[in-house]
Image (cartoon, rainbow, N blue to C red; front, side):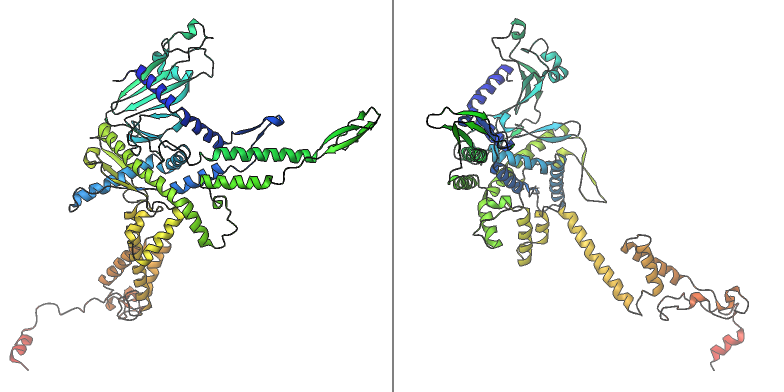
Amino acid sequence: MITVEEIHALYKQRRAAQGPLLDQMRKVRELANGDTIIPLNELDKSAKTSVANLLVTGLDQTSMRIASTFPTPYFPPLAESKDKSKELANTRRKAMQSMWDHNRLKIKMRRRARHLLAYSTSPVVIKPDFKTMMPVWSIRNPLDTFPAPTEDPDNPVPLDCIFTYRKPLKWLLHNYGPAVDGRLRLGRISSDTMYTIIEYTCANEVVVCAIGAEDEEGLDAVERWGASVVELERIVNRAEIPLAVIPQRITLDKPRGQFDGLLGMYYTRARLQALTEIAIERGIFPDEYLIARPGDNPEIIQIADGKTGQLGVVKGGDIQQLNTAPGYKTDMALDRLERQERLEGVIPAEFGGESGTNIRTGRRGENILAATVDFRVQEAQSIFESSLVEEDKIAIALEKAYWGNKSKSFLIQGRANVSKVDYVPNKIWETDFHYVSYPASGTDVNSLIVGIGQRLGIGTMSKESAREVDPLITDPEMEADRITAEGVEAALLSSIQQQAANPQGPYQPDDLAYLVKLVKEENVSLYDAVRRTDERARQRQATPAPTPEQGMGMPGMEGMLPPEAMPGLAMPGMGAEQPMPPAPGPTGPPELGALLSQLRGA
């Protein structure tokens, strides 16, 4: 069990070691947020940047391409030949996808892609949520993350990690009043006093601490009194594995963001643009000097104001203007700096909706853009694949540790008849071994759809595999059932049309009218309408019509066939008419003479 003093000392040690890296991250953040100020001391002026921020353009475009496709987890069955094992593997996959959907991971992956490109790391911690009984993905700020050093830079799971965040005193007293009041050094308290909260997580426990105010010289004895750090909460980690995952961008020996090299060139370009604007302004409103004539004492009677049109009046001298214009190489220098920024940050002109003047075909433009971006997108997606595998293992361990024997359920998106699936974590999570893969690593969603269609066309990919990698299809099995149902429905409709076109077919005008009425007016599905029409025809054919002797009970109609026995609009004998009852036979025993004549013959 680690003490809070050891955690505090570990935090200060790691923060000092990561000082230069954190400074670089803050500069990138300021530039991305537009908070950079270009100082112009020699002109006694500070100007906001008025040039295009290529860092934001490259960051947004590349990160959106990385997150435009979403990965898919694959849990292989433990026994390939057993249907029960395949069913459990399929349930594991759907349960993991349900956890991803519950955490809105598609949106969080977009933020994580920006963290990875700008800060070279994308930390996340997985914790149990006892309200929803699900693991929760919590994205952390890389500027406030201090993981333990590791020998393998490609291993995204550190042994322990420290996260920090800031909270006001009111929040501290409301949530941890007894642990803070009278124990923590509060310093000089105000309504906006903020305190640093340390969250230490490892395989054994999660410890939350609060750091007190700094022991400054201006504090009195009461404000200086108290501990520098106090423990707020300590929770046993029942999963017994580290809960933090810190994927790193692949570099040489130290973390480096994709756009770290842009900072100096951006500052130079913005400063040069600000100086150009100042020179243009001075050219519009030039400086004026009073030049004395020989032997005269010059005097200004009225100062000229070019903006209002007021004329200046001088005595004993001449007014001369000093025109200031930007250098003739200023525009060339600005263009050169912009090109260097694009090359350094891998920001092609296509990201801004433009194209090079020497690119004259769409195919050539696609090749240049693919060579610039695709491999970087592929590398980032491979990093996230490795990270998501470890994150899923943590989520599985949390489910087994906290809700192992409890019955849980998840919803299947888009399924109308079966919307909920129940499962017990200890039963379905036989193993946490699985894969996470993007549909086509290195491509965005537009290129992916085109590639799928081409592979289907040349026959190198099955339709089932295409449904699995298509990002627009959430449930491949349900989509296959829908395609099969639509094909069978189309075949049924075609069969009805062919049989209805045949005058001697089973569908007669009355039956077709009844079928159309069910589908159009009563909104009955086609297959149900066919079934009800068939039952109606069977019932009519099994019910005999009234006998001619009954004559329908109307005077003058004796001996005539009833309307039900007539074919109507159908061909005779096609089943539209009701069958006639059999003719009545002789009643009573046969005569003796008739029987004897049958025995004797003719």
